[in-house]
Length: 105
Image (cartoon, rainbow, N blue to C red; front, side, top):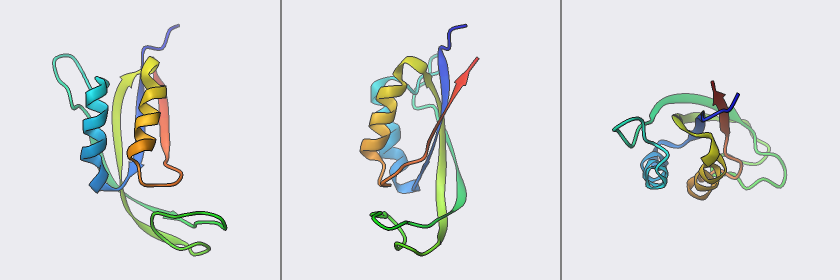
């Protein structure tokens, strides 16, 4: 079986969504039929603790933090996932962005 598409989830601060959306759309990966810029996002809450040697976007080394961010979701061609991850990392402010990729059957 060949996997043609995948679902991507990215946890990202809301202020970066439009920039990331535009960059991904320029690549042509946010198309569904005769539509582009196709994605969704929802607000989520999370916890994190930066460990020694980390350079956190938010929070302090050694202290547990919590806050809001968004889960951005979209479908894209599986063959583009390497380029998609590179674009996400170039726009994303986190030192270690969470990028989940799910193959779609």
